[in-house]
Image 1 (cartoon, rainbow, N blue to C red):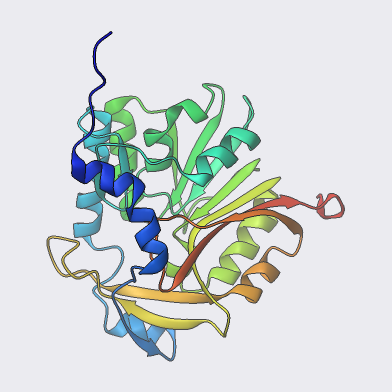
Image 2 (tube, rainbow, N blue to C red):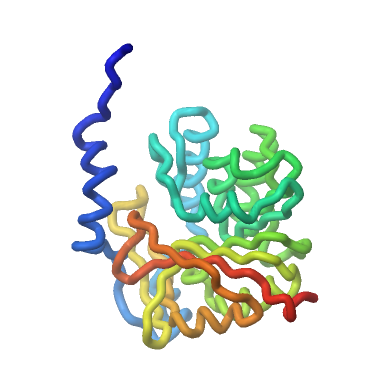
Length: 267
């Protein structure tokens, strides 16, 4: 029997010790503020819809599609795919005929990085801003991807079985109105939030500065959400699971949660 090949020392360190260190010494978002409102933070920002962001996400997605990487997150391509809590949740809730929407899902990285989680008969939607939709439609045509891209400002969203908010609510100017609109319009059976910044006190606006992350200077407003307000936004659902991802910033705390619609909230 051939000897097993050990991964490099740095890779073994990252896999086994980095999560422990993250709990002891949490990483943090680079932010300035707080600001009094979204508008105040936006006045100092270059904008989340910067073409620099779209270009970096597209390059990372192409690396996955072309087999040069295994996983994309926030415009970064990784050679190995982490075993994420959201993957286990999706394995439990997705059926062969599910309609699934990733709100703020970029260029479909969730679906592209883990295609085995979704049956061929599933309907896969990405709800995004116009610049991402344009790039996503182009990628889908070129690579024959089973993805639909919907402009969050111009198009209606069909009824959903599963709705995902991953690293998006904190970047919306009014996340509470968005949640209310999507749930009222689509009545999803399951809602998954992931990688969502929370705090115990009132929600606060900051400017995320992303030092050294993008090729150019990209800054945008980020709101650290009040945990109780977040739970109230899903009052028609019962929370059945929550988690923390070890790779997410620890300051502010980021969480994931699984919500199942209450029987008495059915349309």
